[in-house]
Amino acid sequence: MVNRREFLGISLGAGATLALTPELLRALQQSGGKLMQRAIPSSGEMLPVIGLGSSATFGNVSRSADHTALKEVLRTLVDNGARVLDTAPAYGGGSSEQVAGTIANELGIQNRIFWATKVNVAGFPQPGAPSPKADPAAAKAQIEASFARIKVPRIDLIQVHNLSDVPTQLAILKEMKKEGRVRYIGVTATLDSQYAELETIMRNEPIDFIGVDYAIDNRNVEQTILPLAQQRKIGVLVYLPFGRTSLFRRAGTTSLPDWAADFDAKTWGQFFLKYIISHPAVTVVTPGTSQAKNMLDNIGGGIGRLPNEATRKRMAELVDSWPQAGRGGGPPPASPTAAVAAVSVPQAVLERYVGEYEFPQFTVVVRLKGDTLTGAPAGQQEAILVPASETRFRVGGGPTEVEFVIDGAGGVTKVIRQGGQEMRGRRKPTP
Image (cartoon, rainbow, N blue to C red; front, top):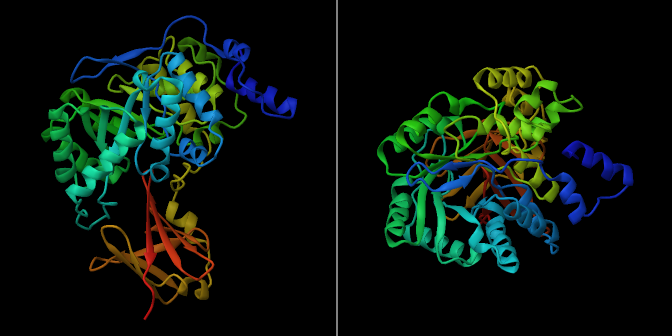
């Protein structure tokens, strides 16, 4: 059996990336057993427990003219029994949906995929501020654009992305479900601060799914959200099971423990995935990858035995004993504010970013107070922008990232990133 680490060792030893040949695929394939399936609680429909996410790696590769690697990933997904592809209009400005739809049609597999996408035209809810409102016409237009990009007459699942104006956008999804254009509906929440609102929605709205971040080193949803999903019979899509790549960085060169064989984990990737899948509330986990060999290894995480409760505790304790690492696009787990506050940015640089920035649904005002940059939607309480570099900042040192991009003509664009979404606002010209 060739595992992920051995494959990478072979590739590096050869001095080049090896092509995923049929022979190599057979060598990588898991021996014995089939990919596990779980029932969607609201319908009983069975779904394979391993899917594919597209918020980071897929979106990045989709910008390339060569989509060969992504084609192999999707082929590997469906050829090995998996179905769920999670995407969103916010991923790459729609490019993830577009490329996935194009490739699926080229391969003739569009009807073998369970298409899960999202809607959000309201922007990001800001802590302590009223949630921005969604324009119903804009939300419907965004959904129609998803249909056009994915190239299917009916989308399996659409969720309101990051709890953004749920009343307006979920109402639209309810109507589309009645019309038969959308099979399942739900909401996603990727921040701990959103969980109270998520609980309220789960208790009061007829949703089929929620989407949440969950990893062996990010277990907060185990406290209330996952038990409530079981109680309310709501399916759970899991995002970022590897903390993007932070878990692999934390594992480093550590050898997989011998006792991982007790639940058929052959690689660290499978170790991490089996922890997630072994929670009975989880329906599907959607790790992202742009490499077919990793897609196949991930599928192996849904084959064979699963850890019991005592073993899950042992797994978590092992990972908790490792040094911390930043979670990809998010802040480092330990003292994020302190970690980024050490960066000193010259005042002359900060002055370049001052002004009003126009976003699709709101205006953000950036001010300089002494040597501190602040920002907030017009008329709302200001938040300190904590510098991570001369161009990147975190709102209050939290998970929302702001980047300022200056073009050759001196124009400035403010990019806001949060929970896998990205919004761009252009600074108004000064009079």
